[in-house]
Amino acid sequence: MVRDPFADDDSPALEDVLDALDDEDCRAIVSALDEPMTASEISDESGVPLSTTYRKLEQLTEASLLYEGVELRPDGQHASRYAIGFEDVVISLDEERAFEVDISRRPRTPDERLENLWSEVRKET
Amino acid sequence: MSPHIPSSQVGIVVTKTLTLILGSLITYYSYRAYARTKAPELRALTWGFGIMTFGAILAGLIDIGVSAYLGHNLLPVSVFAQSVLTTIAFAIILYSLYVE
Image 1 (cartoon, each protein chain N blue to C red):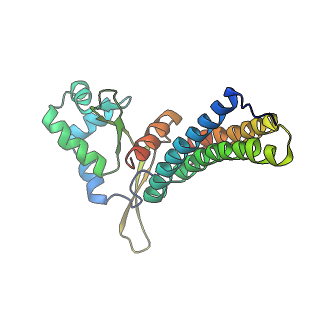
Image 2 (image 1 turned 60 degrees about the horizontal axis):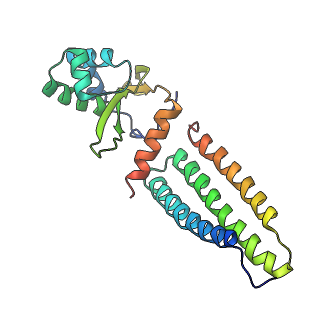
């Protein structure tokens, strides 16, 4: 499992993950994401209306199933781009038979890492 | 040493000083991002920029400080020292893209 330091250290809440995966629009969005896309591109590709797409993207990001990167544009109009943030979702029982959710993350490519590193550094300026 | 200072030498001092200032700023912002996120890749990025900036200081010290002290022209030594540090710094920055 590859740990993503830019994602929240805590695992997402089980309920958030299950709710997101139980949602038809969320699944359509995940299926449409073959590369990082902006919300409007995702809406076009998945056929989910744009206003719904924004809501579902927030839900998916909250559940750590997508990660949000910032696309830096020369005109200063920065748009968020979303990419798949997971490979597997494992739901298991711990010693006390409580449910645990574990998300194994997709390893990010060097250019995605570079983009994220710089967006983190930019936040300090 | 002759009283005449070649303009290229003045240019080196000016650009090295600018490298030092700009490099310090990038290193500082990278460090702040690391301090905020505690991400190991940002720590590596900070080291990379820090070492590159340090190379400019070191080269300046060798070229001006040590050269004047010893009375030798150590420009090739300072260029070599900076090249070594720049290479190491680029290796660390590349590593920052692969570190877990």
